[in-house]
Length: 126
Image (cartoon, rainbow, N blue to C red; front, side):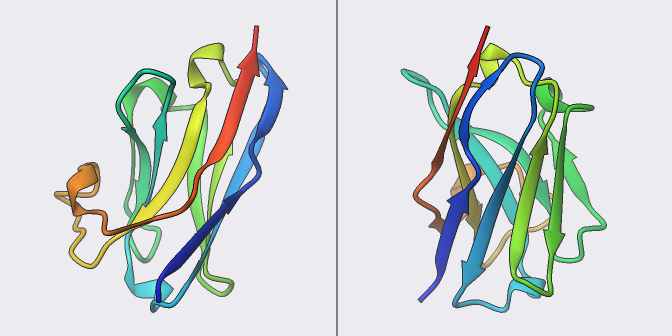
């Protein structure tokens, strides 16, 4: 059974930093693409960042480029999202996800993610 457990969310002032973690179990982690998405109140879930199984290929949505970094520790089956220079518009529930058929071409598309964590709340105050 695949399980994804996010942690690291919280309340931070604008300009601050947080690091989210997502611990995965029940799958060969080092063979799977991993992604982070977020959902703000009243909005659809949107793509934030994703990483190939090796970590060599990473991709970010434009609004977080230069501020967020996705990384993975394949030894401990964990993917991280380092978030710097946070803005109030980054406020959302952040979810990590993975799937069986994610590729470089599809890693930004929510529909290819089969498994999701429960989410962790990030709140950025102005």
